[in-house]
Image 1 (cartoon, helix red, strand yellow):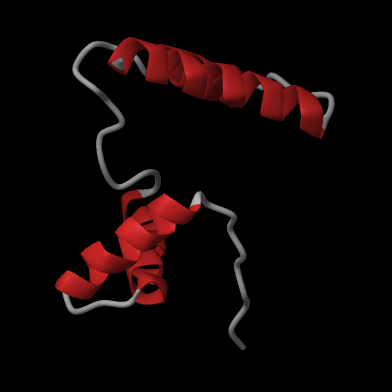
Image 2 (cartoon, one colour):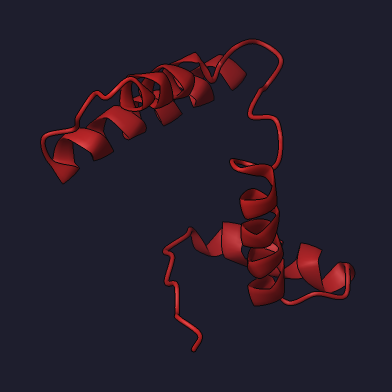
Length: 94
């Protein structure tokens, strides 16, 4: 039995991804299934998460915190921490 995954993304990201995958002969659903299969094979994210300037430090810290048994006490705490990490990465890249 197949399950459905729903993800909200910015319209521009979705349109650009659709165009990219179409140029590769794929639809977005197939590309996402490929990503999930590769993540399972790799036992993690199947590509390096780096921008060359250690801008992903906050994300790595959050992952290390969680892997060390740290708990997020609410969904809002988790979201706030991840939004902060993503913003930090964006600021470094800018």
